[in-house]
Length: 250
Image 1 (spheres, helix red, strand yellow):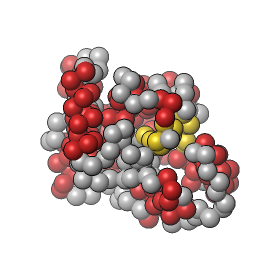
Image 2 (image 1 turned 90 degrees about the vertical axis):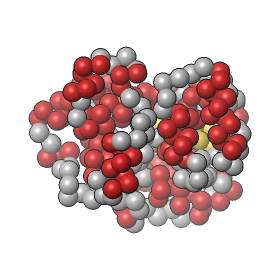
Image 3 (image 1 turned 180 degrees about the horizontal axis):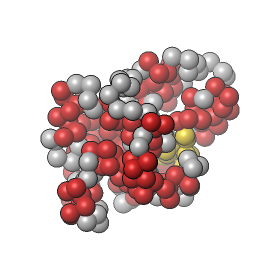
Image 4 (image 1 turned 90 degrees about the horizontal axis):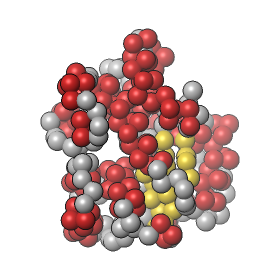
């Protein structure tokens, strides 16, 4: 069985991949490797036709990622994996899907801070076309899109991507909340449930004590959710409230 951990990014995938590959090396979960950025950009194009899907498959082969793609926890591959599964290019019976999600408030804060930590990240998020899905190509009004701040775009991205991944929930699917994974009182049970879903036996060896040190964003540039203005919170709720309720983030 192939294992695909799909996410928006900024959900602890770097640390989780380290832990799973240490304690369950037989899963062979890849993280970010050569070609991930290119596959991410192509996967965010607003296309679904047969030639386009075949090109995504070709990119996985070109960059040595296998086809069907090797098991992965790479968030840059998530949209590509989603499209290949949704449109029948990956056999649902031969894969397990873990949908790793984080609350929109902490996700947006983390992304806003993370993208400002280096010049390269700023370029990726502001100047590279289709680094993320573009609202105007997904039934979002053009003028509203033009007026969107980067903050609001991240709220939209959280909702759009997680809605896509949630579409896969009818078969071989597990919703994994980052908060349950990293909260002291729920970690042990959540890890056991994850291992069981993956068909593995796992003791309590996974330690999440230092999880906040891996790929950490600088918290000083954009305020935490608790310090957002009422207007910012309302923008987030307007985009995300339906899915927040489903995923128990209200």
